[in-house]
Length: 189
Ligand code: ADP
Image (cartoon, rainbow, N blue to C red):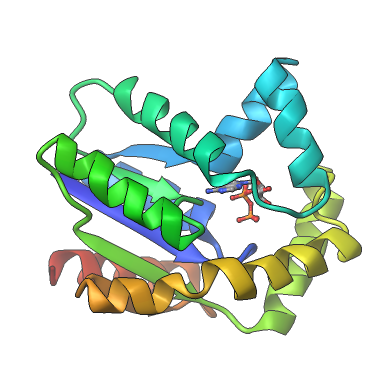
């Protein structure tokens, strides 16, 4: 089983690169952001709760997102492995993921940190907002999400370094070059 955590700030290209890796290695893709947006679209209670956090640029409470992740993981069948995109985003979530996988006799194989400078992130997210109409891709909410990233999510870099699973990826430049670097990191593990 190949279990990959794709990590990075909002706008770092996690979704784009995940799609490429999924095709190449035949993995399942769990994007917590996509799961939540589907709940919002379907008008569920969970979607209504999620929307309040997402529109504020805040993270959902750990217990809630951990439950969502666990049931999404249980819903996967015959998988060769999973790429986790947008999860974990806090230390508590990383610990929960480690335990969840251990209960299934599995573990994270590698954590890929897509590193992109802040001015580039802002440019990409503003452009995405214009094209996709994602309500949280406006300047005020982007700034809040970047602040949340630095305070709550970036500490995971050291956490995964201690686990011996960290791989740095330069996320600025040609899509194809970034994919090549990612594949090298996956295959080097
Ligand atoms: P981005 O990486 O561009 O911020 P995502 O689609 O991954 O976008 O997430 C959108 C929003 O969904 C986040 O800002 C947050 O409110 C919520 N969310 C997604 N994943 C998590 C998570 N693991 N923990 C808490 N909230 C989450």
